[in-house]
Image 1 (tube, one colour):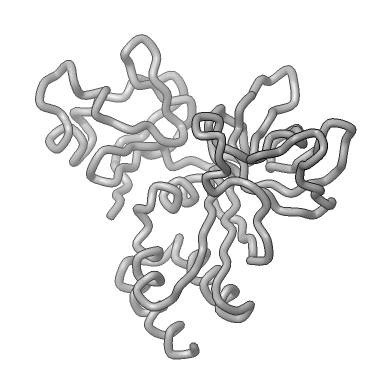
Image 2 (cartoon, rainbow, N blue to C red):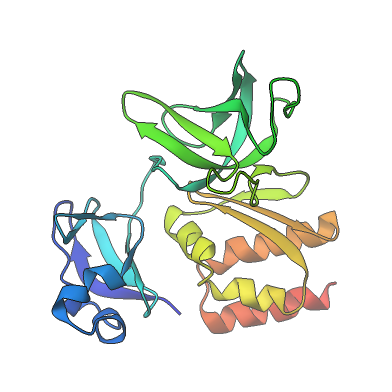
Length: 243
C-alpha cells in the first residue's frame, strides 16, 4: 500500500518526518534515528543529516520505510548505483552507446560484463536491450553504465534482456515496481509465471511463457499505475480468464 500525502514540497525544502503519516511511528525510536530509518526515493536527498527535496510535488510513502516525491520529470537524470534499462544505439571501439532516456547516451564498455575479456566479450547489435547499473554520472560528461555487479563480479541479473517486451512508465511508478510495493506484481504472480526487470529511468521489461501472455502481463502492469487496488484485482481476474 502507498499513500499520497497532503504535504507539498518545493526544491530545497527540508522534510519533517514527523509530518509524514506512518513513517515516524513505525521506524523511529528516538529523534536521532529518524533519518537513518528512512529510505529516500526520487526527488529527495540527504545533506548534513537533513532530508531535502530537489523537486516540486507531493510527498508519498509506502507506510513503512520509504518516502519519495510524486513529480513529473520530463527527462531522466542518471544517479550512480541506479538500475536502468537501455537500448544500444551505436557501437564504438571500446563498447557501446546506450540510450537510457537521459540528455546524453550512456557509455557501456565491452568489458563491463560478467567474465568479459578482450577476446571473449558480448557482441551486441544496435537495438539490443540491456539491464545495467549507472556507475558514473556527471553533468559535464556522458554517463557510464555496467552490466555486472562490481561487488560480486557476477551478472546478478544485469546484461542483455532477450526477447520480452518493454513498456514505458512514470519514474515514480517504476520506483514502486522496483521496490516491490506495487500490488499488481503480487496479483499477477499468483496466477502467471513471468520475469521482470525494472529500470529507474522509466522502462520496464517483461517476459512470460509466450508472446501473447507477455503482452497481457505488460499491459496489466502499465494500466495498474492509475487503478485502485480493487480495480487491479478485477483486471487480473479478467486477464486470467483469457489465458
